[in-house]
Length: 582
DNA sequence: GCCGTTTTCGGCCCGACTGTTTTCAGTCG
Image (cartoon, rainbow, N blue to C red; front, side, top):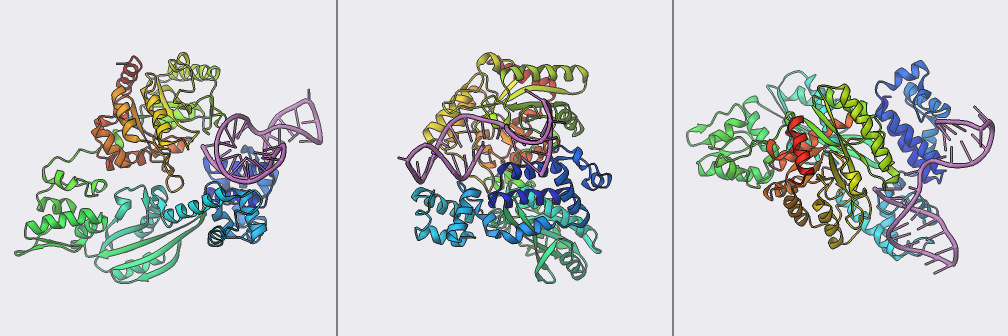
C-alpha cells in the first residue's frame, strides 16, 4: 500500500472509533497520523523497511505496528474487525451537518438506524424528536441535511475527477492504436463539480482500444462496451466519509472526426446549440462527426478550424457556457484569458506558525521551486485559537524571521501578511498598530456563519471598507459539495470592494473555489480587482493555484485583472499604495 | 494513541453556539 492508501485507512479508523464512542484523543491520534503520512515527502515503504516510522511526529509504537502491517501485507486485522462491527451507513450519516458521532451512535443504539433511508423515515415519523438529547429542531435539521446530501449526490470535486481522469489517460496511452486522446466534458471546461468523466480517442480500429480501456487497473465495473462507446465505473471506496464512485466514458472515432467529436463532447450543451445555430445560418450542418454543407463536408483538422469556418475566434473550453462567448467570438472580442504561467506569486499561505504543516522557509523554497518570484505568508490571527492564531507578540517574531529569510535571498521575496479574522461585528482581529506592520491583510470569516443576510453583509462590507484590508479571503465560505455559502449580498460586498480598492480573492483550494466563476465575472464588470490564492497549508498545496486559474478563466479574467500576475517589485508598489490609501 | 517528563501518567485547542435541558452535551471551526 502507498502513502495515500494508508492515510485513508487511518483516517477511516479514526471515524469508526468515534462511532464506537472511543476516547476522542485516541481517535485524533489516528487522524494526526493520517495527516502526517499524507503530507510527508518520500515513500512510507522506505521508512517501514528502515524501521524508522516512529521518527514521524504522531506515530508511536502502536501505530508503527499497524502501519507496517498495512504497507507490507495491505491488511490489518484491527481495521477489518472495526469495519465488520460498524455498518457503513453510519459513516454516511456523519455527513449530515449538525450530526456527529455521538448522535449517530444514539440513533443506532436506540432506534437501530444504520443508514440515511431509515433515518429519513424515522424523522418523518417523528421518532427521532422523542429521543433523549434530540428534539423537533434537530429532527428538522436532519431532514434538511439529508435533502442537501441528495443534491450533492453522485458528483465529485474537480480535483478528484482530475486525478481519476489522469490515471485513465495514462493507462490509455499504453494502449496500441490510439492517434489522438483528450478529456472532454465538464472536466475540460474545468467546472468545479464533475458528474462523470468523458474521454475521446481517435483510432483506425476502435475495438482493441475499447478492450484495453475496460481492463485498465482500477475499473470496478464495466457498464457497457461497444464499438464507439464504453462505460466503466471507478469505485475509490470511502473518501472523506463518502463513497467516491464515478463513471467514465470513452468514445472512439476516426481521426477525421476527432475535432467535431471533441467539440461536441466538450459542450456545454447550450454552447453546442448556439454554434450549431450559427452553422445553420451559414447553410451548414454541425454534429459530432462533421461540418457539412451543400458542397460537401468542410475539412477541419482541429477545433480551431471549426470556429474559423463559422467566422468565429477559437473559444477556449472554459468559456463554453453560452453566456456571451459565441457573440464575443463572432465580434472578435473574446478576452485573452489568464494562463497558469502568468501567476508570479501568491498571498494566502499558512505555515506551522499557525495551522500549516511546513515552516516559513520550506514554504518559500517550495514556491520558488514552482517558479514563483514571491510568496505572501498569511497565518491566522489571534482569535482563531483552534488554528493557533498569532498573538501580536508572535506576529512580531514571525516578521523578524521573514526579514532574516529575505536578507538571505536575492531572487525571491516573502511578503508579510495575515489572514485576519473578521469579527462578528465586522471589526478586525488586530488593532491598527498591528495591522500596519503587515505588507498586506487578507480579511476572512471563520466564525459565526449563521448571521442573517443583513448582518453578514454589513459585517463583510465593513471589513472590505477598512483601509488596512488589502483583500477579502474566501468570499462566501462555501465548501464544494459540503457546505452552502453563508447568506451574504455579494453584490453589495463587491461594490464596497470596488469603492475602496480592496481586492477579492479567488480561493484556489479545490475544496473552496470561492468566489466562483460567475461571481468573478460580476466582480470584473464592477471593477473589482482579483487575486488568486491557494490557501495552502502544506508545500504541495501551493500548486493549487492552477485550480484558481481555472476559475478565473471561466470568469473571463485576463492577466491584468489579477494582482499576482505582477512581478515582485510592482506588487510591492501596489501593496504599499493600497496601504497608503491611494 | 502520542508525547513529554518535576519520567510511566496526565494532558492532548478551545471557545461559542445550538438545542436540549434545568445545568449541559454535542457539534463546529
